[in-house]
Length: 258
Image (tube, rainbow, N blue to C red; front, side, top):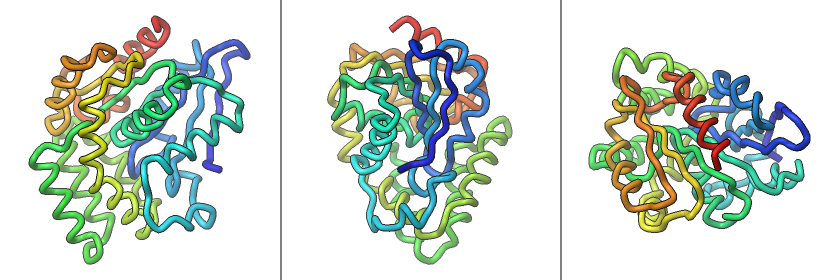
């Protein structure tokens, strides 16, 4: 089972499950736990290969799929007897949340999608293809640093950029390749998600400077009735780290209103 930690508010409180992005871990939510625990029970999960969800337990899969990743999250919910939960995700974690909700909609109370990835722009697609070509010859950390600087290029993004790079250092080379291959194949899945409204209350929290992903989210919110968008000024991709107080306030108010 994936590694997880819980922070309980009360037996009757609703649950909030936090899902990190590729190369991260549950430690990236350190600026959220206290604010959310005031109102909810909090569940933090390390996805396979990340944080404390390391080999040898998770070495048996040669190729990853989003439904496999999602099933491992649901396994934790079942183990804790959590029938339904709010989700908070960042970056690639938003895809995991959306995939779980597509298959188990009644188990999702709401989705908070921070720095959401729902479409790769042309630059992103070119970079992913380049990464696939180089992933076997270039050290994975060098490749990860390169992508981190492309997605989070400004000086103001330094804290979140370094946080993800430092977490990525804890990955294994083989693990990085599996996740990178998974991300490189997501276009058909994202196309479906853009077409189909999840029908679950969804709040996208995006940074104004998230140049690679914000345009597609703006369009999705116009097409999906269940979705709303909050844009944080002077903020990049990792909104929960760069502007935690705004992120926490907006997300908690949204979930309490569901």
